Structures are given as structure tokens and as C-alpha cells.
Amino acid sequence: MKDDYLWDKSGEPDPDIQKLEEILGSLRYQPQPLEIPEDLRISRRQRNYVPLLAIAATVVVALLAGIIWLSVRKKEAPQELRATAPMIPAPANKKVNVTTGDKKDPVPPRPAEKVARNPKPRNRAYTSVAKKREREEALAAKEQVLFALRLASEKLNLAQRKIQSTPPANQIKNQHRTG
Amino acid sequence: MKSFFQRNIRMPLFAALLIITATCVVRAQDPRIQLASLDHLAAKASQTVDVSIDERLMKIAATMLSDDGDEKAVKKLITGLKGIYVKNFEFEADGQYTAADLESIRTQLRTPAWTRMVNVNSRKEGAFEVYLMLTGEKVSGLAVLHSDAKELTVVNIVGPINLEKLTQLEGQLGIPDLGIEPQKPKTKNEEK
Image 1: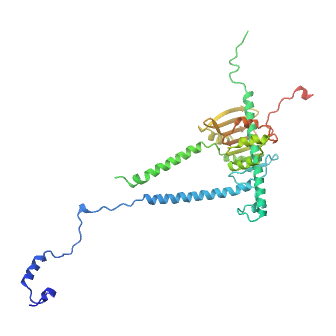
Image 2 (image 1 turned 180 degrees about the horizontal axis):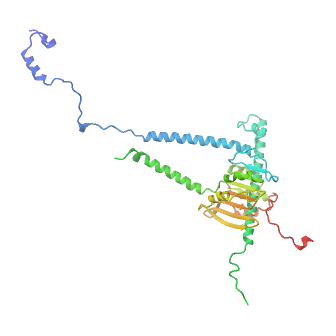
Image 3 (image 1 turned 90 degrees about the horizontal axis):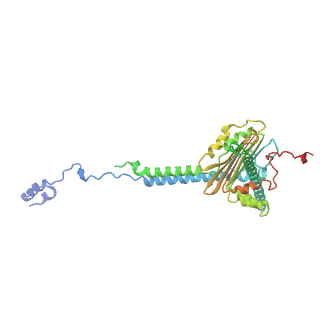
């Protein structure tokens, strides 16, 4: 008896084998789509956006800080030049602008100041110019402070004198005739 | 089930609102007043004085003040100050500035942080207003408004200032008199 039937189903089949084939045939693989039961289905995981938002916020804050820092640096540079502006008090009928803060100065900078704007000193000549400029700036600031304090003092004293010279409103009302 | 907004945005939003509110409160208590609204008066004025000294310049100025005489007193006075801002306009004719110009300054001084200490009106010499910002018992800001028919002055000092010492500065420092003191009537001896 040949065993070819076991290999390629040719030749005479063995009755025992045929019987086994019939029994196990019901369990044969039958192609069909996979169906997962409803209770076993895993819900779709939602993405957590918090870390992304935190990163985006950090980037925005860093950018804003950079912009503010750059703008402050730009503002500070012209301030150094403006400090050498002409001093007060000025002659009559002339406008005096001694702004040293955050206002634009219409007066164009002098040529010597342009040289001193370079932040990196290169030689001794530059250092002496820078020191001279710093001294001028300090003197100008001092004069401005003195002038401002003087003006404030004058106005306060004037107000004080006015208060002292003004009689109280009910002074006469409260007087009584005698005799 | 809570929405994405409720879970992730609500808390940062509240935090941001809190920060903004705190910033507004701090700004309302800033002793520096904005004087830029008066800048347009410079075109009408015959003389304008605009002093703007920030903390950095104040420190630089302090280094130039000597440690003896009147300058010593000034040095002590400006120690700790964060800024002095002055705008003074003198006009040749009356009515060059409006009530709205003054109101733009007064509005900033009407906050609870400021207290009006002096309010004097004089026909000859105009109106004087002195405002103080008090932090505890210390003065942290001063504002003086003087409005005359032909003159408008605003002085704003930021930082702790000793008013007594400030008033004593008049007639010192070798700075020429600004000529705002009222003239005294001549005595009989002077007339002779």
C-alpha cells in the first residue's frame, strides 16, 4: 500500500484516514473578518496636549523676553548720547529739551559722540573720549537734578506761603462783637 | 465628562487673569505719572523745560555731587530716588493750555494711591496742587501742579523724598533764582 494519499491525496485512501478527515474537517480554517466583542473593544486614547502647550508657552515667553531685552538695549544706547544735551536754564524764548529718558531727541548727535558709541574699546584714544563723555554725562545729569529739585522746592515753598497767607474761611464768621 | 477646555485651559487662564490684575494694581500704584499728554504744548510755549531723569542718571548725578556743603544735602536727598520728571511751559499769551490738558494729569492723581495735600487757588499766582503717594508712613512719590495764566508746571518725583529738606533747598546750590517768588512791597527806607 502506497502512502501517497497522505502526501498529495493520490492513490488509494486509507479508510481510517478518511474517517479522521471527516471528523476534523469541521474544524478546518474558514476565512472571515475578525470581529472583536463590544465589551473587549479598547477605547481610543486621547492625546495629552498639556506638554505641547507648555512648550509653546515657554517658546512664546522666551521670544517676548528677547524682544523686550532688545528694545531696552536699543533705548539705552541713545540715552548715553542724550545725556550730553545742553543744560538748563535756557535763554528766554527758546525751547529747552533736556529729556534723558525715553523720549526722542530732535537734536542730532555730535560727531564725537558717534565715535564713542562703539561698545568695544580699541585704543587709549577711545578710552579717554569715553571717559570724557561719561564725565560730561554725569555733569549734565547733576545739573538737571539740581535744577529739578530747585524748581520743585520753589513751587512747594510758594504753595506753602500761599497757604500761610490765606486766612481760614470761617475766621470772620466765628468772631463775636464785644462791648 | 469634562471638556478639553475645562481640564487643561481653565487653570492657566485663571493664572493669566490673576497676573494681569496684579499688574494693573501695581501700575495704579506707580508713583510716576505720564506727562506725554502735555508735549503738544511745547509748540505754543515761548519757553519749555523738559527734565526727565531716570534712576540710572540719578545715580550718575550722585557720583558728581561732593560730600560737603549744600551738595552733601542734595546727595542725601536724592539717595533712593528713582526719577525726577519736570515739564514747565511758559506762554506769551493767556489761555494757551486747556482744562483738558490739566485733567489728563489730574486723572492719574485721582487714584487711591495719591493724596492731595495742598490745593491753593490764587488770582495772581494761579493754582497750586501738591499730591503725595504714601507707602505706610513714608512718601514714595510727589507731584506738584502749578497752573498759571501764562505758565504750566508739573513736577513728579519718584521715590522716597524728604519734603522738609526739599523745601529747604530754595536759595541754595548756587543756581540762579527762577524769578517766581512774589515781589515784596517796598518799604519807606528803600524808596528813599
